[in-house]
Image 1 (cartoon, helix red, strand yellow):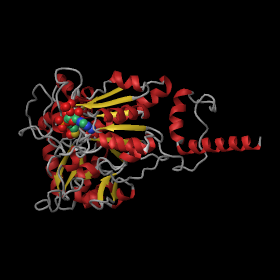
Image 2 (cartoon, rainbow, N blue to C red):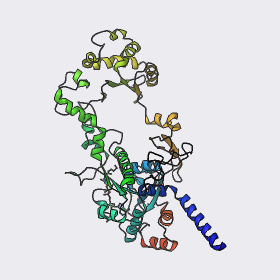
Image 3 (cartoon, rainbow, N blue to C red):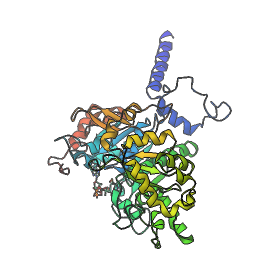
Image 4 (tube, rainbow, N blue to C red):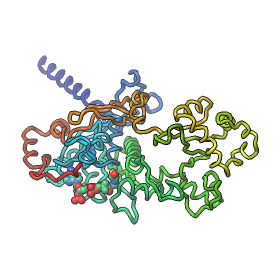
Length: 483
Ligand code: CAO
C-alpha cells in the first residue's frame, strides 16, 4: 500500500516537473481547448499575474515556429517572433544553409552579417527536404509546431510535398504563413527580390526627383516590410485559433506590403482628379501635373511642407543635412529663428496657402540660416521652440548612438566564429515581455538537440538519420554563393 502511494506521489511529481518544463506549450494548447472560461474573472481573461512586470515570461512563450525561410523577408518575420519569445526552429539545407550565410561576407569563412543580423534568437536544424527520411522529420516537426513560415519561390513548398492540404491533414491547428512576390494574378509565379517589390508596389515611381529616373529606397520595405506584415498576420491567426481551434493560411505579397507602405501615393493619385497637388514643390514651380503621382524629391508626404536643407560642413560631410518642416503652428518661431520676423505678418508668407507657391524660395532662405549651424545645433535650437526637424544621421552615428544602445534597439552580441557584431534588436517594446537578443545559430547547431528533445528520436534513430543523409551534407556539397 505504502509502495503504491509512493509510486503515485512520484508519478504526480514527475508530471508536475514535466508541466513546469513545458509551461507555455500547455498554455497555448489550453487556450484553444478551453478558452479561459473556467479561470475567468469576469471578462474572460485569467486573473492578472501577480509577478512584477518583465517576470511573467515572454509574449509568445510556448509558440513553436517551423522556420522554412531564407534570405530576408521571411527571416525578418521569424526573428521578430523569436524576439517576442517564440521558439523558432530554422530548417536549412545540409552543408549549405540559408544562402545569405555566404553572401556579402566580411569575415572569411564565417557567417555573414546579412545572415547573423536576421537570424538571432533562432535554432538551426539541417534537413534535406527532398530526402525521404528528411521529409519524415519535417512531418514530425509539422505535428509539433504551431506555425510554418516560408518564403520559397512560388510552388517550391508544394514540390517538396508539403501542400497546404497535406500540412493541414498532419496538423489541423498549424498556421502556414508565406511571403510571395505577388498575390494571385498575372505575376503570381514570379520570383521576387526587394527592389522588384519596390518597383511593383508604387514606391520607386514616386521616389526620386522629378527630372531623374525612379529610385529605390535604402529601407528594405519589400523584404523587411513584408516580413513585418507577415508577423502581424501570424499573431492574428494564432489569436483566432484560440477560438476556432484550427490553423489557416497567411499570405503576404511583397507588392501588397510595399503598396501598404506607399498608400499616401495612392491617396495623391486620387487627389489628382480634383486639381494639382499644391503641397508638391512642382506646384510652386508652375510645372503641370501628369496623370500619375509624380516623384516628389524631398517634399513631405503629409500636409506640412518640408525639405532637406544643407547644414554647416555639407561641402565635405555627405550627411550634414537636416529635414526641416515648416509646420504651420510654429511659423512664428521659424520666422524669428531665421531672422525674418516680418514674414509673420507679410500676406505673402503669413498663411500656409500663401506660402505654398513660394516654398522653394522659403526653404532657400531657411537654408541660408541652417548652413551657419551644424545639424545638431539646428536640432537643438528648433526643438527648443517646438519646430520639428530631423538631422540626417549616418549609419556610423546610429551605430554609436548611446540612447539606441540603452533601449536595446542597437545591440552588440558575441559570436563564436566571427566575434562581436551589432544587430538591430526588437524595435517593438513590450513592457511585460523583455527581449534578450541572442546570436544567430551556426548551421545545424541544434540538429541533434531538436531531433532528440523536441521530436523524441533515440540515439539509435539519430544515427540512422545521419547515415541516411537527411541531415548531413552530401559528399560533394552544393556550393553556397561566394562571398
Ligand atoms: N532541402 C532541400 N531542398 C531545399 C531546401 C532543403 N532544406 N530548402 C530549399 N530547397 C530547395 C527548394 O525546394 C527549391 O527547389 P525546387 O526549385 O527544385 O523546387 C530550391 O531549393 C530553391 O528554392 P527557391 O526557388 O525558393 O530559391 P531561389 O534562390 O531560386 O529564389 C527567391 C530565391 C527569394 C527569389 C525566391 O525564394 C522567392 O521568390 N521567394 C518569395 C519571395 C521572397 O520572399 N522574396 C524575398 C527574398 S529576400 O530578398
